[in-house]
Amino acid sequence: NNKIQPGDIKYVDINGDGKINNDDAVPIGYSNFPEKVFGVSVGGSYKGFDVSVLFQGAANVSISYHRNYVQPFVEGRNSPDYMVESWSQERYDQGLPINFPHLNEGYVISANNHQSSTFWTRDASYVRLKNAEIGYAIPEKLLKKVGLTYLRLYVNGSNLITWDSMLPGADPESAAAASGNSDAYPITRTINFGFNVKF
Image (cartoon, helix red, strand yellow):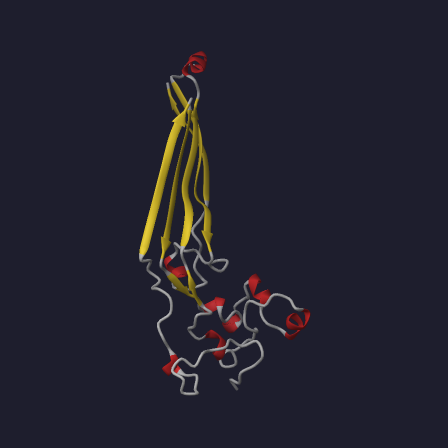
């Protein structure tokens, strides 16, 4: 029973033959390998302070979501929290935001809603603050009192901020996530504190 229901994704009859089927399939978006990648590195120092940052990103790249993104309850999977904005009669009647098709539990009854389409194939372009470091070198005249010739304190981090339009949980740098696999583990954000010292 795969009848169209309220809250289902609508498809366009591309070839105009009055049927919605595989003959209406056309290329969508870009590959999941970006056509453009870029990076910008900036750094400087002033009166003992130093800073360096690296931004990186990609453009002309798409992601086609599948698995838990489009079939949240199949095979015992959980539903991402953003799926609360799926269509339901109650949400529709109350005028609440609806950003996803209605939810269900099976492959067959949801087949209409997990086909490749412009709904699930989306822009995966991003800009990320990949690395940043701030340091301070203690003036040498202060270090002589403790028997040091050099002491620099620093804090740095990686994968600090990402600007993108992807669904929550999808990391634009993860190969698995780029293929739309919601089981991919996101790239970890790290923050370090440390010092460089010379005696």
